[in-house]
Length: 481
Image (cartoon, rainbow, N blue to C red; front, top):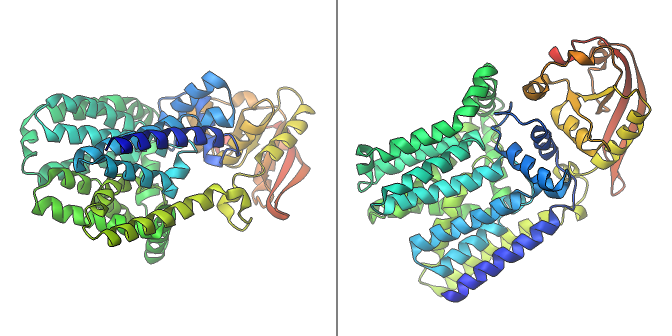
């Protein structure tokens, strides 16, 4: 068994070195640029998410400066931590270093996790603190040591500071305590309630920020996640299709099978450890399935459910008695998952018709042109754009990292403050060429004229087009409408 521990350490070291080199090799995606812009304006919380991702970027860029490498750096150790926690949980439950090694290997060749380990988003700290919380809950449920509940409360609180979907940890934990006859005793103990209090105390800054901003973030996420949008059957199809894509088809089927088997085995054999993994997998997947009947579910939302299911699947695969069947299933899942991930990692070779890849291109060229035009304007002039992601990309890729405002002030007002000082100043307006509200923008200046059209090409095909306008004498009111 010692050889699997060595293989585990070699795997982690190899992946870490690879990721440290790879994360500096491509432009920030729009969301990453947006979170970097947050990090320049520290706050108790923000419009779309809690503040953890901004804090992580703020610390890493303080250490090394504003570059793709330092902005993304936090994703590498956090992903490494998830792998370690998956290894420990699998080893403790199935009493096997071999199964634990395979579970980590499978996790790291899964497309969703492999991509998440290279970019910095709120999901990165969320997944880490979710897994840390799950491991602490497992330790608390396994013995009489009540002290595990206190670090559990801290981990859950930090998860809540990462992303609001961490709140799903509470119903999953409650379901586990209700289903496990052995663990129902905790309802009569003070430790779980103190853990809950600790988590909520850590989350207090986000509550305070929302109170100060008319609960805008809570409201936005509820509408985004539970509001009625689109055709239910189409949304359901998109949900399953996206999961097949980010996980790979055979692994996805294996994970679903493991979730269901985990319930049956946990109850039939009174295996609380298996039951724990079930409670933190299938209920989450079903919750987002039902959510998809109301609105579109993003591909990354159910990610937490696959962590527990990955542990279950690894254990179940290596318990198959027929060797040929076991090898066939392991190879089938391994090869298809690895193929999906390798294809994604070779994104520079992929054709321009794959639009998500195009998000990584053209920002340096745009930033360079905006910088050139800005240098010709008065020093106190400002830059703005119609959307927060475009504004953030411009801010990062301009030479001086200029603060760039966006018209959709919901996204910026949480850290802009009062911007009346912009009145009377000239500006550059940068937008996609198909922007259809130019008269609205022009009405807030005495004069607006086009300065430049910019087209971005990839492999000879046009993938983006921008227009830059010179705006004279800002009259006010633009960012308040």
